[in-house]
Image 1 (cartoon, one colour):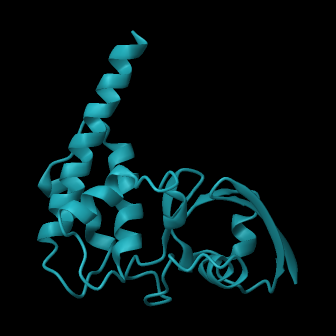
Image 2 (cartoon, rainbow, N blue to C red):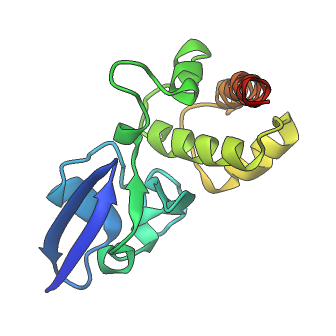
Length: 166
């Protein structure tokens, strides 16, 4: 057994886990954060994506002990109370989900993607960067549409904040 200490969604958490415990299982079973899904356990589908120290990572490909000391954001940590994160709102508005199983991973990938491309995204970039996320329900059309809309909204917000700071 090993001790794990992390900051998850802004809260300091700790626990003892078997050394072989995957981060996704620690989040779901020890912390009750079931929004992070287990889709394949082989890092192929992207349903388990979380942000670790600001980067999108497949939590089924990392041991909980490897993440010790890190700051993690899960799908539960994106919204600000009752106010959805702009990517969550765009998925809702543009029908970027069907069964919802892949949605947390898609949203976490999208927020990372938008953060790395603050000037905005185009469809080809979104489709290329979604390569590691599998949706078994849709043709990705509305997922891409939602990410592009969120990117546009968030890049406008960034420009507005930059203007206010000047």
